[in-house]
Length: 321
Image 1: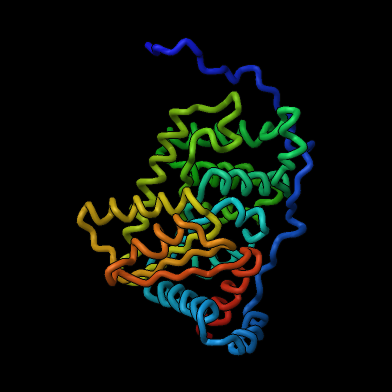
Image 2: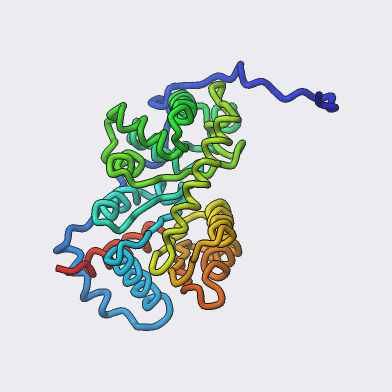
C-alpha cells in the first residue's frame, strides 16, 4: 500500500471533442510530393554542381550508403520524430518504402499520433497555445480512444504499438490512408516500432488509456527494434531524423543489447538529420555506435522539409537504370 497522502487523479471525468471540430495547422494539401524517376534524374545536374566538401559530400555519401545497403539487402532503418510528419514528408517516406529504400521505421509517440490523425482526418497539429487555457489540448476523442483501443487489441495478438495502429488504419480504410506511412508500412509488412514516454503523449490523457498495455506494447517494440538493429551489421544504415532525445536513447540501448548478446554489429552507417545538432543525436547516433572503426557517422544540418526531399531526390536519381 502506498505511504503517500495524495491519491493519483482519476481521468474518468475528462471531456473530449470530435477530431473533425478541431482547428489544425497541418493538412494533406500542403504535403510534399514524391519525384518521379525522370524529374529526379533532371536534378542530377544540380547535385553535380554542389561542392565536394563538408555537408554536400556527406549527403552524397549517405545516399550512396543507402543505395548500396538496398543492393546488398541490408537494413535501412529510419528513426523519425513527429516533426517529420508535421512537415509533410510522409509521402516521400512512402515512396522510398516502395523503392526498397526503407526496411523499417522507428518512432516516438508523436510520430504515431500525427500520422494517425492525418490518415483519418487529413489534418493534424492542433494549436496548443489556444487550447491549453481551456483544458482542451489533446482531447480529440478519436485520437485517444482509437489508438488506445488498437494498442490493447494488438497486445492480445502479439503486436507492438506500431503494428497495432497500422493494422487499425488498414482495416478501417481511412479517407486519407494514402498519406499515412503507418498504413503503407502495414500493407507492405515493413516493421514500424513505437517507443513511448508515458505521460508525454496526448493519448495518455484519455479515459481509455491502459498504462500496463502502453508499457508492454512499447517494450515489445523495443525488443523488435533491437532485432532490427542487429541487421545493420555489414552495410546497413540507420537514420535519425528529427528526434533529439527519444530515438537516440533508444538506438544506443538497442546497440548495446545486440553486442551484449554476442552478435556482430560493425561496418554500418549512421546519420543524424536535424536543424540543430543536439548532444544526444551527435553522441548516441553519429559517434558512439560507430566508434573504434565500427562504421561511419554523418551529420546533416538543415530543415527536414528541405534536407529529406534532397536526400530522396538523390536516392531516386542514383538508382540503377
